[in-house]
Image (cartoon, rainbow, N blue to C red; front, top):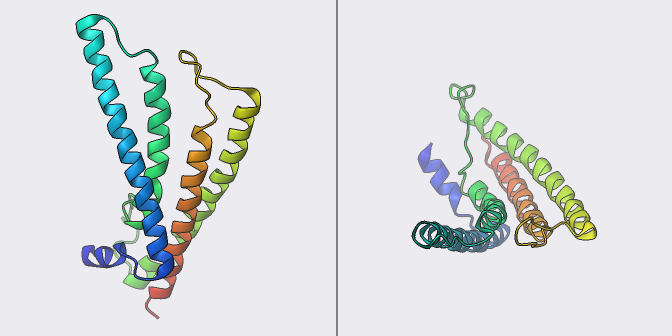
Length: 172
């Protein structure tokens, strides 16, 4: 099972390589963002402890930054087959049945991610229109939404790609 997942991790066709490249770029951005948030949190905690001067709004920045980073990680995670799989019900099934359900779940996740991306666009537009801001720093909240919509759109494309690849590789 692990060998099969390793083989499927690196796509060789142009569509798969493009999806892998785009999702990898998002992972790098998300990793950089999480690293910056970690450094900021350490500086804030040390500043609070030693000087009673934390970074103002650190909680807001961590909340918004983590939300963005988590969305940015999702497409790459799916392409690497890193999602949690509960296979207790199908562990006994032949490979073809498991592959079919992998493909079907990929289609379902593609639909869910696409629907969420669509709604994130409208949520971001509403936040922008109403001027929603954070409480302490008065930062606009809407920029989180396009980032999430972009990542969810890429996740949807990655799910469709892996689902069709699963169906194509399914033993007859």
